[in-house]
Amino acid sequence: MGRFILTETTYPADLRTPWHAHLGAAICSVLTGSYVERFGRRQIECDPSTVLFLPIAAEHADHISPEGATCFIIELEQGWLAEVGLDRLSGPHTGVQGGNRAMWLIEHALREFRSPDATTPLALEGLVLTLAAEFARVDEPRVERRCPPWLRRTRDSLDSNFLTKVTLSGLAADAGVHAVYLAAAFRATFGASVGEYVRARRIEAARLALRDSARSINEIGLSSGFSSQSHFTRVFRRATGMTPFIYRRMHA
Image 1: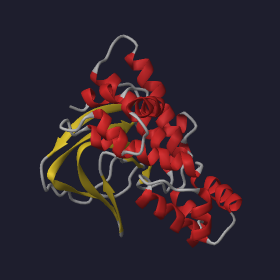
Image 2 (image 1 turned 30 degrees about the horizontal axis):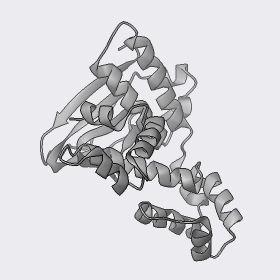
Image 3 (image 1 turned 120 degrees about the vertical axis):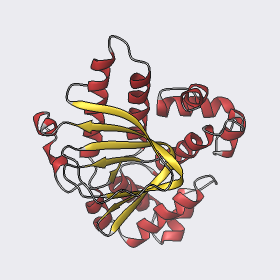
């Protein structure tokens, strides 16, 4: 479609691709299943919570999981990033993962792709451009270098305990720093407040759970840390642009 190509591709179980590179950059989101993406000595576990950016000519190899995988892929035409002022994405952004906003944009692009109308080309152009801009803001290696060990431990603790009630004072006590300093350092390093980070992790968990049709939406909301189904619906719609019911229907 114009300067980019969108595909929804299903890969067989246990597929291993040889080392290869693409002529253009690509953005990949896992819809079902999972796979491991390898870049030299680095590897990334990719599942339905992952949105991955692959720059031009980045050599990589894939190992699809035993259950297979289905991916939504946006291939960007060579030279397009430079034309729209995002040429910094042609640099060493190998395997950069996007956050909750990148997932939100992917969901909307997928909905346009699956149900096109007369305005779909224009809508997709805007979504893909915004998605690329999101990745241009991310510089994962630099974030890791400037992140002190205590702050990395705080983030890891949130990743493990985001479904439980956490407090800024408790996190600060565990880290051995003042709560105000922790709050400022966390936002400066990870681009979100502690509360926003926890909320994004809960939405991410709910996205995965909604793919299991055997579980009720109310149960998923409560088990994902939301106080009620209405609270879950309100926060989920604000984060994704759709209700949990519509999201489930899209991924049935």
